[in-house]
Image (cartoon, rainbow, N blue to C red; front, side, top):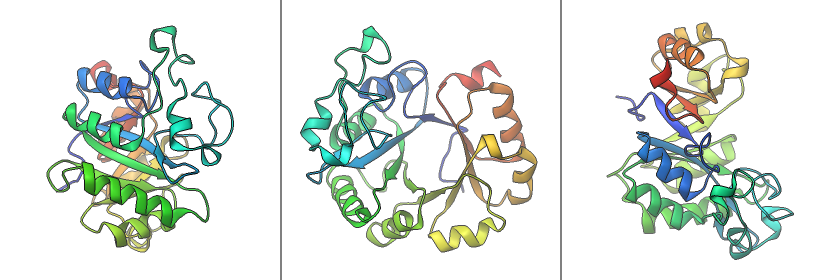
Length: 241
C-alpha cells in the first residue's frame, strides 16, 4: 500500500495560480481538486517556523535578507503576494501552525519538506515535531516529512517514527533500496529534468515521486513508467493530458 494515494501533489500549493506557500495557494489547490499538497518550512532566528522555500526573502516576499536572521514575526509580516499579482497583495508568509490548520480545514493531506540550515537541523526537527504534535491529527490524516539530507530524514525518524519520510534527491540513486534504508525513508523523490522515465521501470516496488512537472505529456510518461506521484505547480495538469 502506497503512502500517497494520489497521482498528483500540488507543489507549494496551486503555485501556478497563486503565490507559493501561502494560505491562498492552499485554499485554491483544494478548490481545484488537489488531495495532497507540498510545502516548505524554515527555522527563523528566534526558533519559529515560517513557510518559505528560499533561504532569503527577496524572491517571494517584500522583505530582504536571510530567513534565519529574522524572527518568525518579522518573516510572517512580509507581503508574500504582491510579487505574484496585485490580486494577492497583502497575502502574508504563514507560520507552520496557521499553515497546518489551513491544510486541515481544506481537507488535504500534506508533504512537509524541512529546509535545513547546516548545524541547526536538530533545532528545526524539534520545533516541527512539537508543532505537529500540537496541531496535526497524527495517524488520522495523510502526512509525510521530507528532506534533501539524511540529517533531516534520520532525525525525523528518531523524533517522530510513526510518520513516514521521503528522501529528495536530484538523480535516481544507483541502489535506491539501500539509499532509502540508509536515510530511514519510505519514499524517494527525484528531479524530472535529470531522470528518464525508463530509469524508474525497474523499481516499481518503491514509492517514487517526481518533481517538478508542468507538462501533461511528461507527467503521463512518468506515471506510465510506474511513479506513484508527480509534484506540479498546475493542479489541473492531469485534466489536460
